[in-house]
Length: 112
Image 1 (spheres, one colour):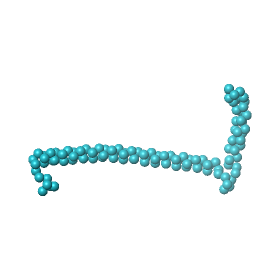
Image 2 (image 1 turned 90 degrees about the vertical axis):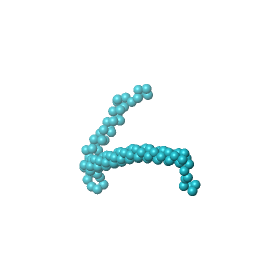
Image 3 (image 1 turned 120 degrees about the vertical axis):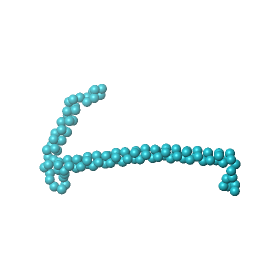
Image 4 (image 1 turned 135 degrees about the horizontal axis):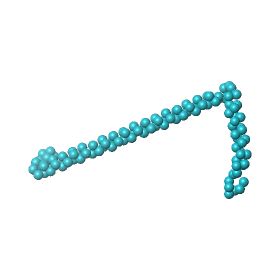
């Protein structure tokens, strides 16, 4: 193998062929062993399907939760803005009343 070129096709085939033969042998003998110690191919496929379904359900639940939290945050920001506007309106009224009282020199509750 030349260090500049990497691995050659022949070297790759020398590694891949035994692995491919072993994989074929394992796939062909997967259903031969029965008993409590081994899982059949059908059971394994069912487990993979159930695991995929559970993962999709969990991720979907997190997506729904994120959407609800985002909607709640937007609602809270809107209510916060409305509250600030209402408080500024009240502050304007208080200042106006104080100005009127100062102009007329009416006695305040604390001066009586």
